Image (cartoon, rainbow, N blue to C red; front, top):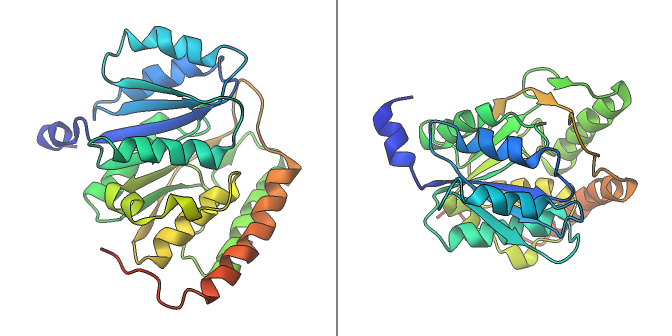
Amino acid sequence: MSDSFILEALSELLCIIPTYNEKENIEAIVVEVLGLEAGFDVLIVDDGSPDGTATLVKRLQSRYPGRLHLMERAGKQGLGTAYIAGFRWALSHSYQYIFEMDADFSHDPKDLPRLWEACAVQGADVSIGSRYSQGVNVVNWPMGRVLLSYFASKYVRFITGIPVHDTTAGFVCYKRAVLERIDFEKIKFVGYAFQIEMKFKAWRKGFTLSEVSVIFTDRRKGQSKMSKRIIREAIFGVLQLKWSSFWDRNPAQRG
């Protein structure tokens, strides 16, 4: 990565990290992302974590003036609404590339520049950190969960036709233009189906989706937020997305 390319990126890259009870991970993930050579900024969207996650972020802000931002929300409102709040904030500022990433190191911060290059250099509008584009790259998950996730993505691809192997991935880079064209008021889902819906809407609008192979490692600290309700939403949400698309015969074209 050239020095000039890195300089051009300064103040253009924002990594949105939603949190709920991530006290054990938050300082380490912030330090690693903000230590990357490319010069990412970070926005933490915290849903009233009772463990004091937001308090730790506030302490860290003095170490990273102007680069570490915090949005505090009242109560646990869901992953999708957290990202949408972050997207709106990013669009109200000058960011050109907006990233989604988990706080628990299941997504390796060192892969962020690869997602960025897929958009900035290789021409993708949306780049996806993919667990399944080159085999199955998942570490420390029980086999049952791996199979559930893998076949869920296969199911989504079959139903929707979206040309992505890892349709439920939550490690994503969006160009600003993509988020400007998506009507957030019409996003229906708040759990992991949100990830499917965002990719589907971007694809339907004619934007280019690209997968970057990454290794996904299960969280080392804290508790997973996965639940049966979230899984049900993803399974049945896909059918709703496909059904709704039948009434949208002329989706908006890429701007």
